[in-house]
Amino acid sequence: MNLHQIVRNTTKADRILILFLIIFCFSLIIFFNRIFSNKPSIHIYSEGKEVYILSLNENNQVNIKGRLGITTIEIKDKKVRFISSPCKNKLCIKQGWKDSGSIICLPNNVIVSIGEYRKGGIEIDAITK
Amino acid sequence: MKLTQLQNKYQIALLSAFAIGIHSIENLLPSPIPWLRFGFANIITLIALYIYGFRAAFTVTLIRTFISSLINGTFPGPAYLMSLGGGIAATISMWLIIYLIPHLFSAVGISVIGAFFHNTIQIFIAYLLLIQCLEPVILVSPLIILAGTIAGTINGIVAEFVIANLKNQLKPT
Image (tube, chains in turn brown, orange):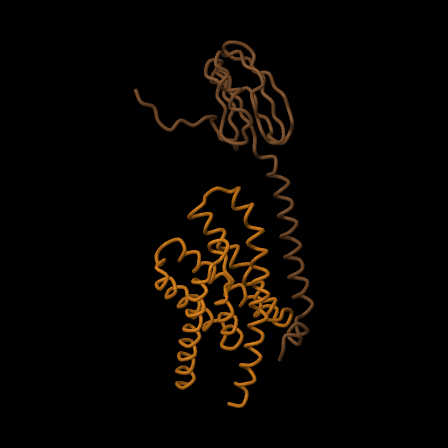
């Protein structure tokens, strides 16, 4: 009994089953990838409130009204940056392009956080007084 | 009657020893993703199922999961439960298919079915015990089932090989 014989001995049902499972899995993989590919999203908070949820995959430019004035951010090639900000030090603009984590402008109270959606917005680890 | 019973016990012990050996050596092999293994021990279950029937196969599976988890040091943990659940599911599903529709599938198809149920139950137990988050489970399960199908095919071919040779040897006695 050799390999050739074993392969010939497999029934039609065997081949259909294996073929079906492989095609089924591949289609599921492709399907799920398409569903979850839009997942990385950007959450923008102004003065503690969530004002925008945007997709990282679409190029976009947004104006956000903060405490001091209007902040402009840009989304391009799955990265985010602050273009203009009314704050004094412009630290948020100096951070440049980011594709993970968050950019925070404290004076204008604007938070841009990149990541998956979390219920309840920003989670607080602990507070000390 | 007594002799055959004794023989059965002897054969169950032998098959279990083979299964434990294969399982343990397989655990030493490096794999790209933890828990993604070939499941060569399933060959032994399949052989036991084909030659000695359901009870022998079930006993071999129970002994194999128990002792190899003791050897690997995962005894009461979730890894043991996953191994046990997967093994039992594979054995029962393979037996049901052989029992209900005897000549539809060859050993290759039966092995693929066993691998499929093994994976499904393992994913389910892992979801209940470890992950408890639906999204990664859904994302990863088609990959695991695909790998299981390929591994099951290879196992089935090996099992067919062994079964054919064993049947030739058993015939004259």
